[in-house]
Image 1 (cartoon, rainbow, N blue to C red):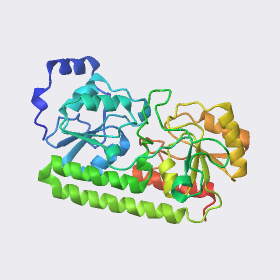
Image 2 (cartoon, rainbow, N blue to C red; image 1 turned 45 degrees about the vertical axis):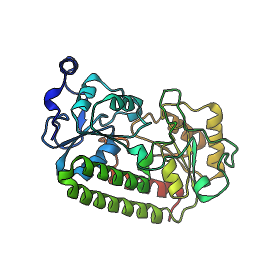
Image 3 (tube, one colour; image 1 turned 30 degrees about the horizontal axis):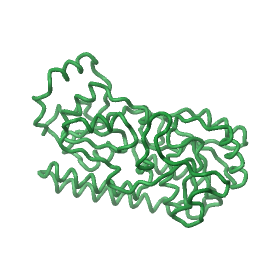
Amino acid sequence: MNVRRRHISTAALTAVAALGFGTLTACSSDNAAAGDTDTFDVVASFYPMAFLAERIGGEHVHVTSLTQPGQEPHDLEISARQTAQLEEADAALYLKGLQPSVDEAIGQSPIATKIDAAELTALEEHGTEAGHGEEHGDGHEDEDEHGHEDEQAHEDEHGHDHEGGDPHIWLDPVKYAEVAEGVGKAFQKADPDHAADYRKNTATLVKDLEALDEKFRTGLANRTTDVFVTSHAAFGYLAERYGLTEEAISGLDPDTEPSGARVKELQKIAKDDGVTTVFYETLVSDKTAKTLAGDTGLKTDVLDPVEGITDHSRGEDYFQVMEANLTALRTALGAR
């Protein structure tokens, strides 16, 4: 499919040779690099984008992820090898605002089809507290009942630019379905020979996401508390969708250390709102979450932001891990 394969520059080839093999992981069963097949070559920024490309593209696409399994996507720095592979791809699928080095590399690349998932659904502002205040009308839009202001989702101390809003849209099945529909249309336009299959695959994926949404709605309908505590603010969209309130130890960046005041505040929230569990995730340190839980006599459990699938994930793909998240939330929230 890729007609630019033979035109890669000598400089790019030199950079690849100097770096050697091995910084990219293919998300398909084939580990060939982008540009090495006759299929529609898609470079995806990280797992949720790669998953969409694989499900929608099916047998017609070869998907390569810039983020390896187990790698924290917020921390990705693009290598010269990856830049060269971007030049060879037919399409790039990414989420602007999550990985600055990816945004820059794709922006500077000559790739014909650039699909920004952030433009396919509406992004919102979330901070350490996110949930049902704005959407469900409980009046806590700017300041919640515990008196702390919701942090704005702007560029953090690590340089991650979230000025366009919270990027964690894939954790809301409804928003993820909106993105899937946009990706499907982009694939149809870029590779019209297989448009019918892309359209069919997109419809199937959207139907599966609608079923997942219904599982969350029914599974969380009868609960004893709305509040859950997480290690970082990845679940704001999910919280809003199902009428919950996420209280995060850190903000949108998982590496941000919480202040002592924030830790004390969370201890009070846990007591006041009947919180039973502090959630941590698989790709970042669980130290702060377990310390908070130990200090407050709470349990700990995993709530996976599905930023990558590893041997430690509670499932082999997006749907399995999200259903494991639902099970964990039901237990923590006292759902019946």
